[in-house]
Length: 217
Image (cartoon, rainbow, N blue to C red):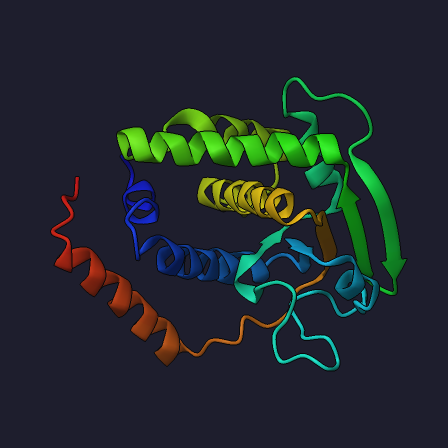
C-alpha cells in the first residue's frame, strides 16, 4: 500500500493528510497552470447567490465560511471533467444538467445519474477501506485512465487520484443532503498558507503517523 493510501485510511489523519497532499499538488500545478476546478455541493439558495467569477472558495457576502475549501482546488478545465465522466461505466446521457458563466468563472452542474455513479465509487472505496484497509484499484483504475486521456503535464498521478476522491465523496455528500453537485472552473485562488504553516502541518501529520506506529515500505 502506498504512503498516500496508508495516510488516507487512518482515522483522524485522513482529512489532515488530504489537506497537506492537496496543498503540495497545488503548489506544483500553480507554477505552470492557472485553470482550476473545484467540486462542491451546497444548498440551491447558496448556489444561486454565488459569484461565479469569484468562485466557491471565497465566502458569500454575509458568510464567514466559503461553500468549498481552497485546499480542494485541482488543475482542470471543463473538457477534463467531461472526460472523467465519460470514463464512468454503466452510465449514459448528458454529463451536465446546467452550465453558467460569469467573467472568467464557469459553474457546471453534474447530471443526477453521474452524481449517483460517483457516489457509488465513494461507497465502494469506503467499504473496501473498512474491509481491507485500502481502496485498492477503485480510484487507481479510473484516475489512471483519466490521466492518460488528459495527457497533460505537470499533473501527477496523485493529483488525479485526489481530484477523483474529492469528487466522489462530494457526490456522496450531495446525495445524502439532496443537493446538486457542481464543478466550478476558473482562475486559481491563492492557497493562503505560509511556508511556516505548511511546515507545521507536515510536522503534525508526521507526529500522528508516528504515534500510530505505521509501518513504512
